[in-house]
Image 1 (cartoon, rainbow, N blue to C red):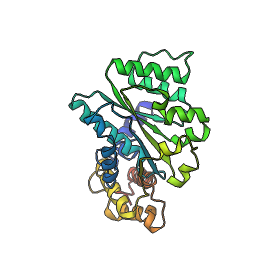
Image 2 (cartoon, one colour):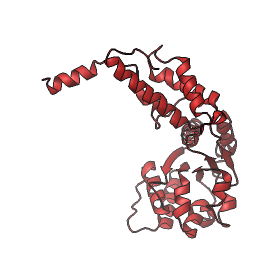
Image 3 (cartoon, one colour):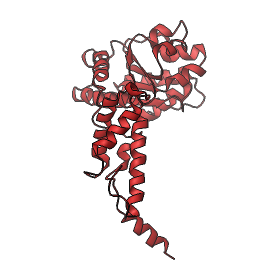
Length: 288
């Protein structure tokens, strides 16, 4: 019988097809975004006024598309890089990403905003409006601008009351201030037609003014994504083009799949795990 130390040591030394399998995880943020360059351009055209005339207006963008179409990763990559660019120009711009499946009401959203910004704002006993007002005073004092991305915003729209929607979507109609330091990216799963069914007359036109559409990926696009990630995740030579092409054909929207990049990457990851198991048993040396 092997000791615990021996079991752990043998697993550490076990051969693997992976260099770093975390590069295939859904939460991994890549440096490159194949086939989402146009969406990055659209976001830049919308938010560039923060660089030219900071605080002159509050910018809103709605990212719409099915699951696995790159909305979240595009928002994070854009927000991170755009904030870096702003900082290099002397503008204190922060990007904050909030998931509305966890922060489902205005109080939760603004509490998460102040936590991510590291603001010393006591929130006990404050209404959502009072909490937001306190945040605005501090970012005004500290000369900070913020892009707040609200991911899975459809969760919020389905459960929020009309006045709560009004506060989050028409923020600066509630807070009449000269310098508008808070801008918004709303990320919603679904088509513009579906989104229109979730909003009312008071918020619909504001929310859907600047829509950035994310279509499901085609097979050739998924192949490019898979190739990029495979180069980062696997040792050279263990994943052939035929594997990547097969997964791309299986999942591409143009060949009957749903165009979901997360699903395509999950399939590649599962194939790699199977190859790892077979390698340990001496039955394989590459992903098939």
